[in-house]
Image (tube, rainbow, N blue to C red; front, side):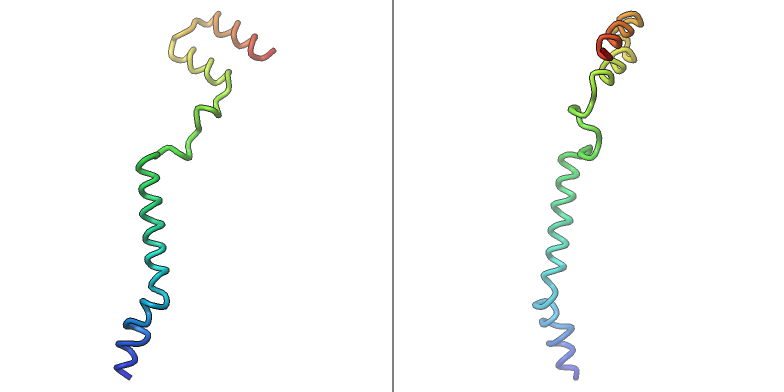
Length: 79
């Protein structure tokens, strides 16, 4: 029985049968970590998702345009 436990289920047999699942999961985890490190805000809003009104509001909030300019441009955008 001891021979079976060492060489069969618990020994080399396990790693040959299901050990590849462990390595597959480990490699997938490493790839996921690498992707997150390279592009951490991938799930966040992309630049292309912003509307013209969003950009206009951002410019107004930064003080790049006056309230009057904001209102005029907002009217232009909404037409």
